[in-house]
Image 1: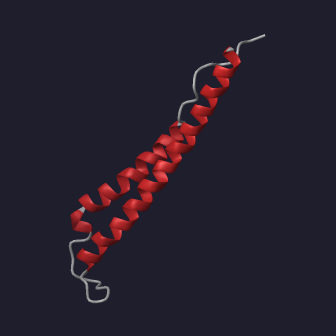
Image 2 (image 1 turned 60 degrees about the vertical axis):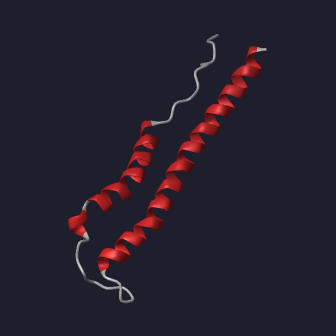
Length: 90
């Protein structure tokens, strides 16, 4: 009979890739200034340059929140795995 694997589960590479994309998207979008350095189209009288940057305040918060939740799901699994292996050691 084989012994159960006592190593905690690792975050899958796909989840790491999703988190990386979610965290990089706002940085890349705002560092690529030539894509939004223009006056039009205006929104409620505000030039595109300003409302695009302001929109990314909310989008960055959403991306960060989703990335955090992805990591926390895997952290909870790891903690649950550690708790079951500790109970099994007794």
